[in-house]
Length: 449
Image (cartoon, rainbow, N blue to C red; front, side):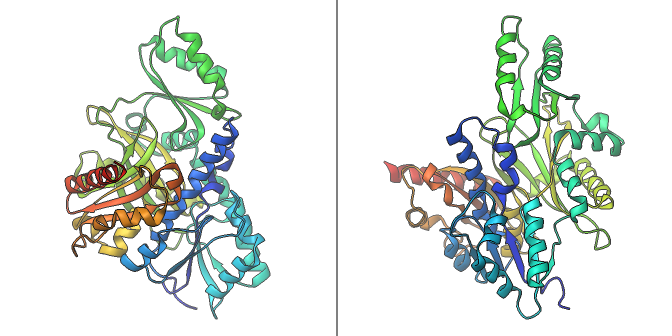
């Protein structure tokens, strides 16, 4: 039997599939489709996952794949996609015999593969079961809980589930969790919102299964005359329907310091959980996630030891319960430097591609060699064609002038029709990485002019 490191790896980039139930609540059909598609577009960056070689399944072709392969040492990484994509990538693979054949051939003579999804879904379990039963493949799932433990992934991915377990497991939960309440419906949530307002405090109303800031609303303290408008806004929000609602005290963070710690949890008996990376989250507006920063200085912050200890404690307890895979713990640092834990995302996360690219390109000690800013909301101006974008950015692409520590990595091009693209700015320091990102944006604006 080949070792785990020699087994062929297949990535299933099922982003839309993982979030369609929640995003499907959007009332406007056009907006709903765009929200779900925007999740699918994140699959572009998975070509940077899991080293090289590998086979990556995405819903749509990755227009900049050759650049990744040839310039960033991913020559052995291929990607495949369905002829008729839907929001359910695993079902699409099952429906198209050519894609199943691609998997069987990739498994080789030993007929064994590691299969890694963005997130565990019922559709992913169906795909794995089909490959095992109908094609006699030995499908390893090193980042997916057993089907009997799937409920746990769903539970910890909720705001209420996280608060419940954190309150039970963390000795200093009262210090690490902001004051919050789980509400059965919007009427109860509104009474809690009103309670915060009467105390002169802002609060945050969160849908239990919110995603990327969607289903999260900040309510400032209001006057009696403003109360009806606030209540109507909450009652009309479709993302709060049919599930628990968490209302928490708003944590002010003047500089928007919002760290996120990712941890990898092996199957019980196959190793201890380990921290993969630490990042600072970037936002366009409150809760509107648009990227991360990975820099050595974050590990030197006064709040890091407490965050690391909390993340590893969670990982160990979850491993004992049957959880397998990645999760990140999102936090906020208050103006006075106090750390608050907010939630867990039970899947590969918004910076996994940064960590795995950096480790592949620079080695395990990459954090000592460079700083990284991953940004998913770069304005492409009038550029909607991927090749045109790459041509215009050519002088900025990693490596610049042969310096492997300086340059731009294009990560998402599928969103160009919305005049957006994703990238990682790499530089020896955080200041230089930010300057590179700003220089690239200015270069695009000059091209537009």
